[in-house]
Image (spheres, rainbow, N blue to C red):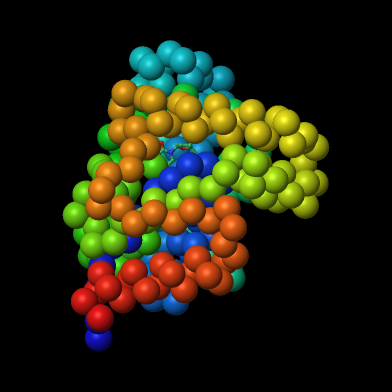
Length: 226
Ligand code: DC
């Protein structure tokens, strides 16, 4: 059997990181972890409990009551949990998306999430997507992929997803939210999204899912010494 590795997939919002990460984890028999879902679950808790996300001390107090985890649903897919209850659907709305970058800036929130992510990665065999996975969470990951795509392509994809779910949104709103999150995620002081020379870059503006998957799996082969 090939050696198990950790795979870090970082990049901008709505680049299809999760879709690729899930497909890779399934093919390899690895665990898939959506680290953004963890920051979204914390954000949901703060919103539900009327905690001001700009007040770091209030966030720190509230964080003591937050337990984030994962469960496998009946289809075998991983869902993020907040205090033991799946919040997979609630965390995907635009209200959470509009606050999550603020919450993800806060160091105490990051430290708590990173500790959990590193514990999950100890045994290897994890595909994790996010913004700081290759730089902070798993700096020694055997394979690091940086995903990117044009903002137009990303906004269009996210718009189609939300409309299909029945959300009432405009393309302009989605595009503005993506640009805002990219800017905050890349410029924040704590663990910003940053590409370093050890990443393999995957620009999927014009690549379909199968081509992305094939390319990424070639990189896995190389990283496993195959
Ligand atoms: O991947 P996503 O859109 O679900 O992430 C939600 C937010 O969480 C995003 O604005 C950036 C932040 N995030 C982060 O700071 N670090 C991660 N490892 C993952 C997500």
